[in-house]
Image (cartoon, rainbow, N blue to C red):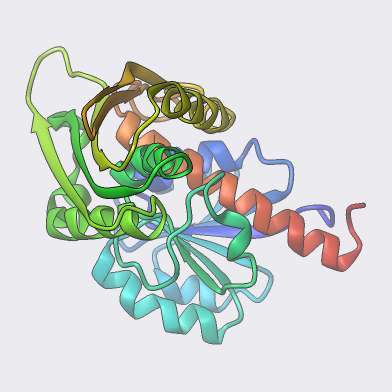
Length: 294
């Protein structure tokens, strides 16, 4: 179809497969390829069932396809560090769902439109996507000297990629709190909870601030939650922000859409939903430049 931008996914694991179903509903993106390296991949089998071309050639399949304009990377931090320069050289836009942080951090409704000219954007982490909007909302109404988040997710929703990238997760999330949330210093902690039945993602946010106005903080946070719900309907405020001297405490929870992953895997769903939202904006921009959309 000429009115949609051709895109590809590299990494047919849990995140890549869930992302596939979201992109298949896209207005501006046409998913034409999913590629990996394992022949027994459930994601590749499901992609083929949906009529999406598949390959076992990994990054090479994408580099050989001149029609693909946007590439969603859902492998791991180390592979993307190798793939990023290759994609850039090939003139393809990379939307990175790993903690590699090669390109600038991007969170919809926080800073997406600042980086539409970049060849590579990073989706931070699941904790970053969930909590930096809240810290950014607090920063709008008072100075945030320090922000700390505790991300609690179901152990079952943490696959091999998540477990292999724990260090990168905490470092990248903390940096995101500073770069996007405007906290002067950030810290991130992740907890894998083995409870049965599995819990949905919950993130507690603490912020040390100057001269907080509780009503202003609550209004700003509520406005941000409503914006995030535009692309993550299961994103909810679990505990209203409350102020104790110079400390603001609040909690959010994220229930997944259940496209491929269980609904308790909100930590993965918020990544795929945010990446799809980012890809949609990039695709619309490309189409406008081509005169394909008004």
